Amino acid sequence: MKLCCATRETGSVCDCSNSENITNAELLEMDCDILIPAAYENQLHEGNSSTVRARLIIEGTNGPTTIGAANILHEKGVFVVPDVLANDGCPINEILPYAVK
Image 1 (cartoon, rainbow, N blue to C red):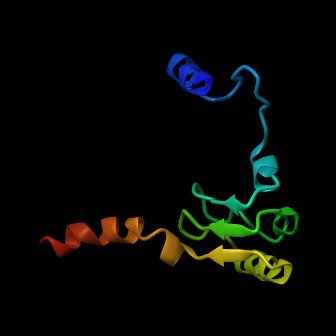
Image 2 (image 1 turned 45 degrees about the vertical axis):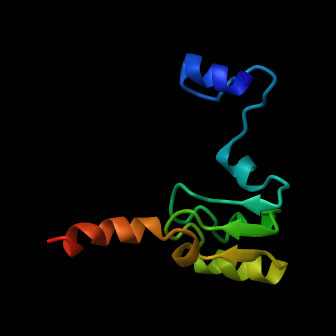
């Protein structure tokens, strides 16, 4: 509830009381079961994929994992749900205007 109130007051979750700010890199390295990179392409790459501690990655954006990172994650036993299966809304939204003409 405090998080909702802080967001309403400041428009951000940063600097919320009883919380700790972390970097994007720290977020990707957190010990978690599921990681959903959903903002940018190439978020997971050869330089950081060896430090990922999630057991399952669900690609919530187009191309968040480079091929090199995918190979490293596979070797580590991390299961990756590819963007083509996990993120079907973007291609549908892109093609829809052409389909209705």
